Image (cartoon, rainbow, N blue to C red; front, side, top):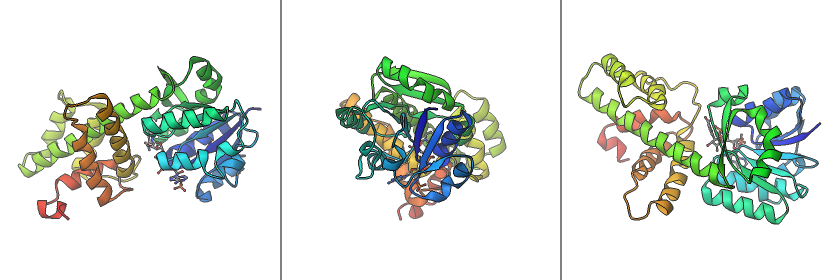
Length: 295
Ligand code: NAP
């Protein structure tokens, strides 16, 4: 039975780890706070005391943590997974990290004989729990083939963009476009409210108009209703993705204005307002009185 070490049991990782249990893998789990692992342990997962402990005897180590800092810690800290991974073991990074970080992890882990691939995901936590994610992979073709048995339980679609790091490039592009759209719809809806338009009519027009994307449709009704129950993607994570993406944009699109910077600034404010709030609460930021926003 193949053994997976799964590290990071947040909104996404918890469901993903459960997919490996459903698929019959031997699964060791670690999370910074143990409480999130309890039901997985009851379903047969082995609790590990550290990423290093989880990785003992693993064929693949899969990480799904918040950001570069968390990723570095779970791979490379003193008790990080790399400490016990055998040469040839797969390191599958599903977290959304910066491009620079993905390349650095690939290099550092490869020096130890570990095969790192980046496989950030699209899809919400319900898709993660149902094995219906889309994986955006950067890997040598042979490494991807080795990793495939560990990717299929998580996903309905695997998109291979090219060499290691390229999955992260696309993920950051995707999420920057999303950040711009969400900030844009928040601003547009706030303007419509201030102008006293009939918001039912505005929603109808938005949803059937040319500016409608799945992202805009998903957020516009929730924004108008101020219904942010059950945050699936937080202001803090959106800000992080947009900032990583703008750093990448600055290296690729030299000497041109990067409009994503405005989205990062908007999400800096949203994150300061409520880091764990739903990203759609952006509308509360743009519709607050000017004097309030300056605080
Ligand atoms: P989340 O619920 O906030 O979970 C974050 C995870 O990272 C938790 O397991 C957390 O541990 C861990 N973590 C944070 N800082 C850490 C550190 N310094 N050391 C060790 N562990 C640390 O986030 P999520 O929504 O599951 O997102 C996880 C990743 O998937 C992120 O990179 C995100 O951008 C990406 N993503 C999310 C979605 C979505 O819809 N939510 C969709 C696609 C991709 P604790 O539980 O102890 O805090």
